[in-house]
Image 1 (tube, rainbow, N blue to C red):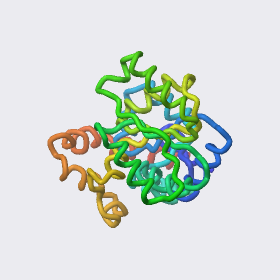
Image 2: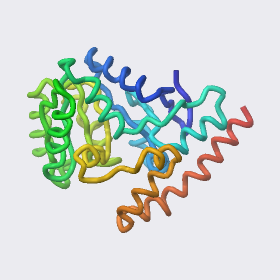
Image 3: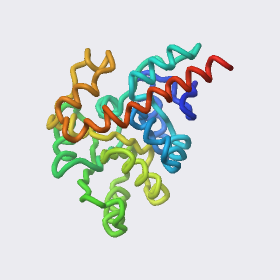
Image 4: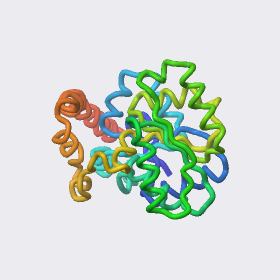
Length: 251
């Protein structure tokens, strides 16, 4: 079941059903990009034809943004049941895949972060197979030599689930450009999730996440970098949401 919003079909999934979906795809060796659109992503794809195509053709699309969930609950008879964040998927997939024999790989993060996250998760979940990590240098997406080294390392590890955390839209575009060369199953684009898993960046408390104010928590933690994204660029989401409401009223 899916819910159509903003020109794409979101999986009508809870966190647990999303994990089951991805694990099933991994066991079947189904390769494809898994995205978790949030408010910022919805705004970004309005002016980016490549991102529109990648999101529309993704293996799975899960709503990582309470405003998207709330909008679906306001205008859809069968809405999205809950938010499914990339950071939650990372942890839940590690927990559920432990002892299953599935191999995971972490690509992204600042130097040492992916390995630190991997080590913490291995300690937490016995039998977890994180078979490799790679911290790519700045500009790697435009460097065919560096890209070749990364792909060779991933392909040498028999990877069932690949996590890429280098931020949108870079992670989605790199995965899309190199998907034919990657010998993997599902490819999850998870942004800053390695920082959260490593403990180098503290995530908002659950109650703040549930009321849709995680962006305020992140803005308070890094205002110099994030103010323009959240306070200027993402304000474009409001007219986009009203457009969806208008469309639902004339159908």
